[in-house]
Length: 462
Image (cartoon, rainbow, N blue to C red):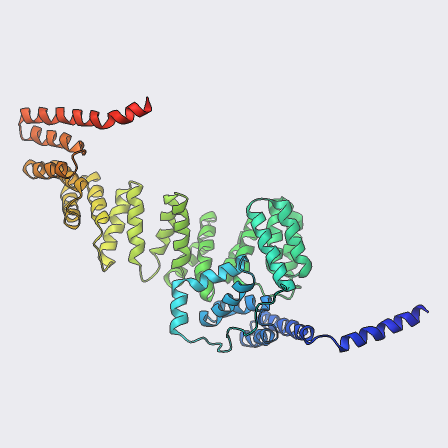
């Protein structure tokens, strides 16, 4: 009787398979083509891989795995943003919060890639916006990557237990997803469960998963190897990720690695050789510098901008902001060096702050003639800048040119009567000219004005 039931159940299943909806059959074709694409990519047969990925997408235009992997191949192996970025736009419709999708989108939105996509036709002309609407019910892959994104957020908040539970839920849909596995490894390391992390890492290294490791995943793996003390393998991962359109995004990782491992000369040599021929490095390094500025860490901003000075051809904007940040850090040598380069490279040099800061920097170095010349240029650009007149007077005082100093100091007071330091400088001028009576009057007036200016704040403090 048991055998008869089993036989009847088998007949029922066969009958059911005969009437499966075409969508499910299409999904099977999608998975077959996805598998073929991954095998070809693993053997670096890129054109065959692209063909298979496109066949997969003809079965499922919103197949997340195919979209992500094909976009990465177009960017890394063909430097073809014209073909990759429409795929990324499609991904953003389905899983906008996924960190890898956001990373791909940032590459597509960078200036060099936008220009290349506009000027060069896409190599893969089959990439078009799908006529189908986004499925109302998320696919298993979409649900998995949404869990992956949520786990990333929990991990960044250092809620490691919840992050681990969430990423394990994601892996229930696809136990071999590289991004999820790497995130799980990083969570386990943070929880000091290094043995489990090493076992998972060995699983990825073995190649048994049959997945192509994309450049972004290589960079994530580099962090894992570095934390586990395998610097040579970490460097190998970064080196492999320096391909095509991904080169710029990998450079900040290489910078941080070479800083941590200063003994590895090969890393520093690779960094500088990469910067010389990197047309996609500007946006990632600029982004790192701006992030540092937002955190009020100007030293770190200068650190990243200094690397951008090695990129050829040099961008004048880099030298301008290096000059600005060095000026804020009270570093006259850095201010002068970078502003002078900006003045040579920039088409439009009408920025009063540059001349004002150069005047101040040369003054601190006691190069009074140059200080005076730059303050004069600042005044030409902004005739109402009272501080520039006063500082010009100070430069003249440094050169003991009393007759030149006196009128510009008085001009500063006409423009801004509250600028009481000008009275002290006029005291120095009168003293230098031997006019004791005038000198004493200016000194007395300086003390009066300073007392008047500071009295309200003192009352508030009391």
